[in-house]
Length: 350
Image (tube, rainbow, N blue to C red; front, side, top):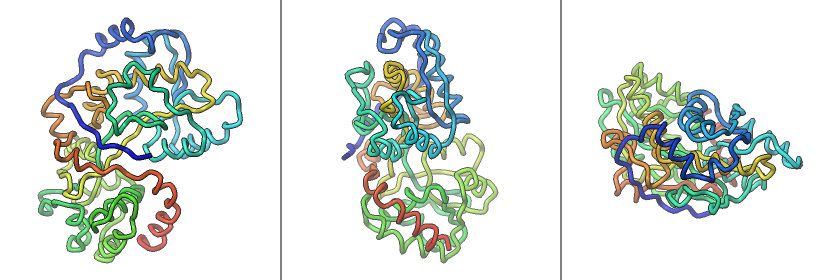
């Protein structure tokens, strides 16, 4: 599916959650009409699961009589469970939280419903790029250039980031191999549907001493202790690191930041389809979206959410940067992921 470039409207902090919840119970029959039902949510644990409860479930669902249960586990495990349950008349979850590429994957596998936006009172406020047949975008950010200004000069592009001159001051995150390869492809003048042009850049950076970190957290530790001073990462994560005192800045590269989103899909055999749509509608409430912007540093996916100007400067993108935002070709990633991972493990990391 072709994805369109979003347009943003981000200005102020969320309204009081209690007021928003009260308004929702009066004005949102799609959320409260089946009060008392159960909704089982497949999601990651940790802070994300906690924030789902605090910003969506408690104020907009539980307060209206819904029972919400989180089925927490990793993304691969939950997708495998969905596949194993595909022939059952009733699955174990009503809604599943996944990354954009994996929302597309489970839809292509025939595991999830086509979203019926006529059932969402808040669906009309979605940014075009976050409104898919295969799922609904919840939060988004973009892959940008990140650097420690005390260690390196500010890069302007992905090409600057992958310059071998940085040697072992450059850090690369192992689990981000898909998006890192896309960023390198952009740096080499390519696009979102061919990673081949970027491979020589990555190979040269690795030969010059670029360090590979297994996780986002390990990369952050490398920035914190001064092992590395430059790399690529989600802008939202950079905000979290800045709040934790890590000396890091970010800049939208001239080639265009690469959009990242996570959202929710509905299994075809969801036991409570009405609860699935109630959760989606609650997720798209302005107050819930605004709270996630402040708590996690990710941008709202709706046009009627507002955040304070200072926070918007940290997490958001200018109109020019939005116009230059690059959306991954999910179909290409799925068709070529095995080859991409094979090259990454056997050639690049070797």
